[in-house]
Length: 297
Image (tube, rainbow, N blue to C red; front, side, top):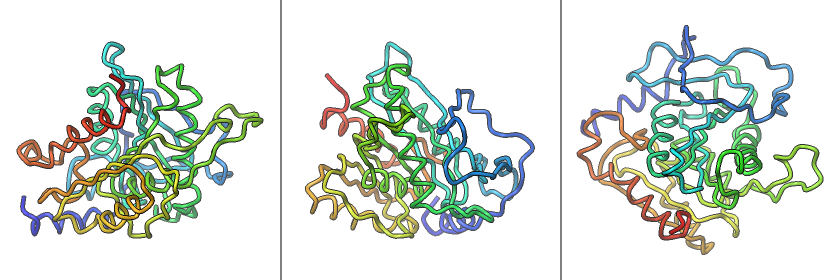
C-alpha cells in the first residue's frame, strides 16, 4: 500500500465512530487493576468500558471508556526470560486503545525476545464525554503501572532495575511523559507500590504522536529508542524530541524508515510488513537494548 492510499485510512482511524461491542477482546492473560480500590480521579465513574465493534477500516480491536485502569500480564517462557520488562502503552489518539496490534501482538513479540510485558489499559482524555486529562489521569496510570510492576517484580520474575516503557502513537506520547515526569516514591506510604520509583529504566517510542506538545526533557530521563516512518503524517515532532534528548545528553537512538505509514506496532497491519525494511525495527531495538546493558550477557 503506498502512502497516498494509506492516508485515508489514517484519517478514518483518527475520526473513528464508536460502537458498543457485544463481547470484550479476551487477551487470554491475567488483568491486574492498577489500584485495587479504584483509581484516584475516577471516583463515582462506574460505567463499563466499551469495545468497538463496527465502523473500523481493519479487524483490530479497540477499547474506550476506561475508568478502572489496569495492566494485562504477559510473561515469557522461564527458559527464555531475561529479567527485563516493558509496560506497553497502545495508541489510539487518546480516544481508544488498539489492544491487539499495539498491545497483545507487541507483548507476544517481546515475550519471544525474553521480556516480560504488561499491556496498559489507561484512562483516555479524548474518549466521548471524558473528563480526564492526558497529563493528569493518563500520565498517572502509566507511572502507576511502572510502580506496580517494580513493586511486584519478584512475583513476576522481573529485575526491578530493568523496567521500561514502550508506547505507540498516543501511547508513545504517554511513554515520553512517563520518562520525564517520574518521582522517587514515598517510602512510608501504606501502599507498597507507592513506595517505589516510577522512573522507567528505558523507553521506546514508536511513531509517537506529539500533537498535544512534547514534554520537556528531564536531565535524568532514561535511555530512549525512537522509530518513525517517513511517510507517516501523524507522527510529528519525533525528530525535535530526539534532538532535545541529545541536548540533555540522554543516551538515545532514532530510526526513520522510508515507508510504512502509521500504526504498525511490532508486527504490521498486513502481510506486506514482513517484506519492508521497517519490519526490522524490533531487531534494531533488541541490539540497542543489548548495547546499553538492559539484556545482561
